[in-house]
Amino acid sequence: MKFPLSYIVAMASILLVGNVKGLEKGDDCPDFSLKGSDGHTYALSEIKGKAPFVIAWYPKAFTGGCTRECKSFRSDGEAMREYDALYFTASVDSVEDNTRFSQSLNLDYPILSDPGKKVAEAFGVVTDFRSVPYRWTFYVGKDGKILKVDKKIKVVSAGSDVAKTFEELGIKKRST
Image (tube, rainbow, N blue to C red; front, side, top):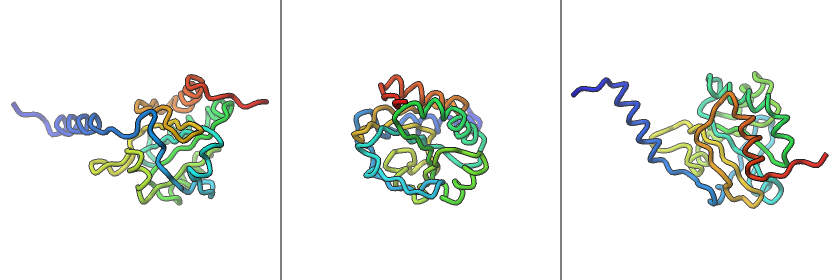
């Protein structure tokens, strides 16, 4: 029986994604120091112990799904900021590309850049078989431990989904 090439590629992708383990709940967050689209450098050593945080990896700036995901983070930013937590999106695009992407969408949060892919590899979102990150969101506790890994991202509701997950994880709300 012959299968079309598109079917074979799709099945191979499913198998490869299914075999990608990545980080899991309870693992230590990989060490990182990444420049943000806002010009600041964000490092685990500076965040750990201060607040829980989210890093939402996306495949590529200026693409449809990534645009919708980042817009969702912007439009639902108020709901996410109710919690005493930080949030970032991240990719392996250059700082310059992510800065332009952020400016084009008028984002109010930083996009982290990892053009060398070392941090993305440590998170397991980039592999020998995949050069752009999987669209996975990592929730990290104040202690630097992974609280949750979401691998089923809905780009149009990504921001509100993060806020809901903060609630589910018991992240405390900011005092007013």
